[in-house]
Image (cartoon, rainbow, N blue to C red; front, side):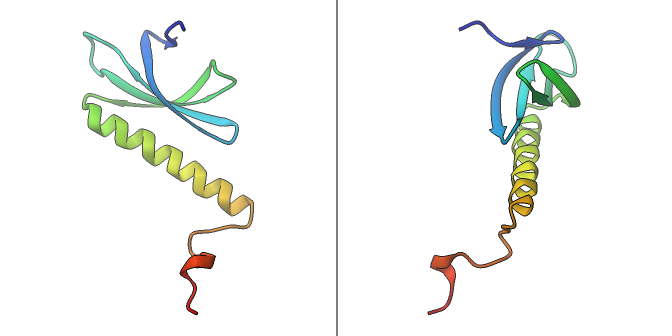
Length: 90
């Protein structure tokens, strides 16, 4: 499989939530070296967040995907604020 590249950044990680994919890209020999983008359709990258630290970039990738997951759950009428079946008092 060919490497995915956007703006010179090699996409190293991705998380798909609904119709939106969140990706992490790495660019060697240039600062900022890391970026996270939202992506639709596999090639429409937008809302880039740029980082020099790989762990900050990874955390941002996870945070962005988590925020989208929460948004999708709210749209479906579900939320973590309500107890799950297995967590309810008996």
